Length: 450
Image: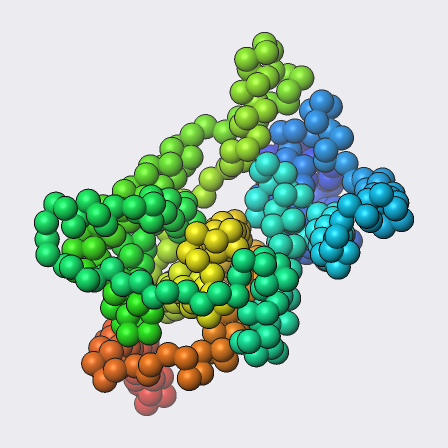
């Protein structure tokens, strides 16, 4: 009886740990982890709730249990049957005039199927971990395509685009939005087009990714300043002052950010109680449960802590730079490859970057906020950084001799901005570290003299 009380009073013992038989011979506690080795968040047998393939609340939902079971061999068999049918059936081959294009699509589909079955899970499990593995596979395919294009010249790349879309390969007419900058209702009405809606939707997505009002405002202003700095290279960056600061920043960007943050606040306070479909009664409740499968399983509010330490500050500056590059890169790519802004490739690239950034920023926040659990950078954030950097390399190579050099005032402006950023870093983080080091050395000298 005494031993049972001792066991119940010791919360450190696991439920399966044997009770102590005597005070002189305690039973050692089991070593946590897998076979005595601590389990990290990126290992196969992970235990963190946001990385489980099967959420704990749905383990016993037999109605959807099939979708959480490994079906690698079944999927392999079905995939091979489909490939064999498409590749060997004569009528299918005759219908497809471009055999190379069909083969490329089959290779992409095979790679995405492998991604869905074999890639490591990320931080999201809704609507299904397999969906986010496919998203990661699409990012990897795009990165490989960029690496291939990096070794091509611009004329060859434009010719390759015609194989994908025969309508491409035609030079674009430059369009400026700063022809008449008089602040009149007629000019403002003429400036309202589909791109205003695109601005609003884009900033709604950025708010869902960053989950921080302050960060979105800084990024919004920084992008407008970047447009000012690059309008000598891209004509569509030339806009009227009221187009920059009234339509873009104060109306479209603010509205999208406001709506996005409201959705984030809703998900943050929403109670999450997951029940299986079989445990849900009523047709209406079951339909609601199916729809909620496409909502987040849980939600984490981001507190970036810019001024807390240098690591957080550097991470925020890096993320801001990556977001600016991700926003500016498509303007250069569509100009170099002669694509209209509403081309499906341009729209698809923007949509995919949104999907890639959702888990990537979540992994980055985990990496800088809890380094003891996230001992290495996540796969989504690593690949997205590589993708944006490769885009910059491609643009750098193809734009040689294509654009005008930076004017002196632009260089001076960005030089002043960089100087202020470095000065703030030194004052905020460098000087306190130096003072702390000096005080420590003085204490050591005093202790030795005494």
